[in-house]
Length: 500
Image 1 (tube, rainbow, N blue to C red):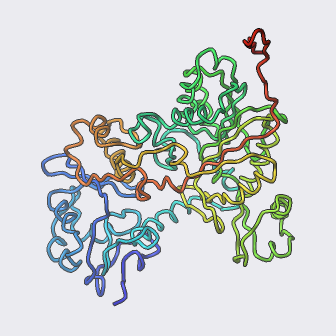
Image 2 (image 1 turned 30 degrees about the horizontal axis):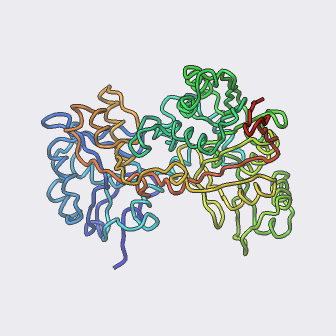
Image 3 (image 1 turned 180 degrees about the vertical axis):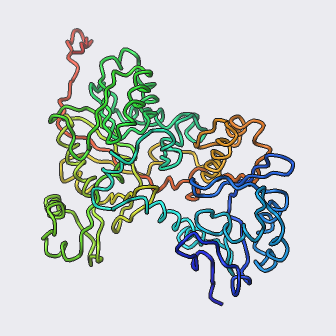
């Protein structure tokens, strides 16, 4: 029998579902990792997926309705059992909730003939979530090839909550010490890795961090250098989003850096040639300008706009190996490759750059829809080929391998962390979205924790948690540094060394 799931049949509007006909024969499943908070003896709270919707408040009957969505009961049975009864504090009936909860904005449950399970590319839950992302994507007034820079320059008006709601990054999840990172923060572990690679010796005099978020990486990286070493290093932040610059410089200076910040586009770095020792670009490449090239443009090498022609010229200049046959449309990481060329220009001989972002190694990038904007996968085989062509020495590996992240650590599902944040916000209790082990969550929530049900933990390397294996690290060295060898004098078989 063909599955007539609500995710497939979903209406294009937010109108309540009509629970009738074939839909009555469908079964109902609760959303996995659904967090339920018991606020009082007769009051339960649930968080819908859409941040613009208020928390759902339920009485005991409403909580029983949610609990009955176990994949065994049909909608007909649920309507018969709960439909006419008051299930919410404002006289909402069970029927009222059943007509709304399976809509993408709520995403509390799933109606279908088969369980919503399987690989992430097949799971029917993803169809619900995709519709939510499409709704987020509708916030983009016009998706042009410059919409990402416009979003970061004009669409973000405040730093408050951005990395909690809009785009949670790996570095933000690990901004506090975590067992999975050997008890360190992301920034501190990254700093240790750079030191082991020899990138902090000799000491750099100018570090540039591109798109530094709120500045946590610089704050933690400072711990890898002594106070007297940091005094001779200028730490420069470069970001398109002006509201982030203040937090970046504030955290960096509190950690002892001689720091400054500038609002600029990394695709056109505002630095002179050969003036930078170290560039850190953490989770920004997917935000750089994409170009949507047609198969005809790629075959003819003639662009329909100056920007498209620039992209085609760049492909030819870098001798990029593009997979054929071309699909009707190809997303090309024009901004990321332009940034790579700028990195070559501004690095000193012997300078280094590290670029960390989610991406692919074969095929062409796909869009990833987030609230208010769309990001694009990074095609790393193109980036690596271009880096070698420019003259870089390059190394490349998945991020968990670079940082030696322990897969034995169990951390709270990120969906649960988002839900708890909303619940704590209503309780006027501080709670930040990050990677929590069970002990860390207990310490953070205290008396609230026993009132929560539905908590679920994943291995930190499980794709169901955050997909860390999708994040790659590209490490680059610009050759040409002078090697300073120690001078010595030899006398009676002994060598006396002097350093300059």
